[in-house]
Length: 408
Image (cartoon, rainbow, N blue to C red):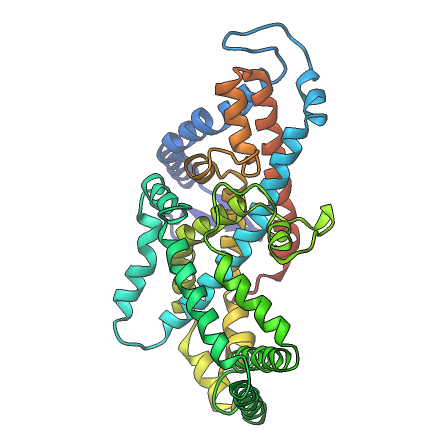
């Protein structure tokens, strides 16, 4: 056996020479030296603040350290209605913004993945909201949602009034009968050509639109009073106090339409919905870029084989594209959920926690207790509880959603 070999086989066993062991030790030391700066940063700015917050939460801490009170802050937290309201706001924000943002991003990414003209321009255009600083962007959205001079109310009011004027003409006889006939013919055509000219998802969407038009035309033709009520609502619904409306969306609509829903059905406030809209607008560009990267990672041979076998575009998407995007979806779902639980800037700039605390998230409540009330120990206790909630949700997501990840 060559003497230069560092690994020798003796009696079926493998023996590593001292030279190889020394080289492995040097490589390990060098590797640890390279990761040492990152390790120090994680400890100083990641682990230490968590431990420090846990230590502060056990004391009566108001600017300066007070007496040790044990779990008193946590016991007070259990009975704090403002905290539970903030947690409810945060959970709704997560449940609404994370799935909808990912769904819209996947749709946009899939469209931008197709060979269309000016594709690089559109990719840049959709990514611009994410690279825009969140504070000035939120201030612009404040003007957009403004009750008196906001462009959203202005455009919505003009659109609603024009639609009301159109309904006055086509909602009554004889035009309403042409409306019903046209909607019925369109719906029948879509059902007869299902899966031939377009994807099943697009056909289902168009068929839903045609069905809604058909049903509304029949109602307007049979009950003119319904038509007059719809026209009246369109003419008087806008403007809306988006960021200043504390009532739930269903309660608000019920008051406008003449009924009062039960308390459990009031829904989130209009202000919280406005915050969710701005959040989805801001983060959709990031999710779109990540989904585009995942789409480019799928081999074109898989698509070619599926189309040769006669698969439609809808089948290709649901049985090939979507399963192979599961690692990307899992990654985005994890980081989006964590980021949504920690959201603060959007609530602070747009609504400052109002109106009537309907947009006070947990992080904003921590800020309020820390700076406004100067209860540092109590704010630290809330932060620790939020940390446990995020950690638990992350572990649950890894346990449940991680099993559904499909790698090529």
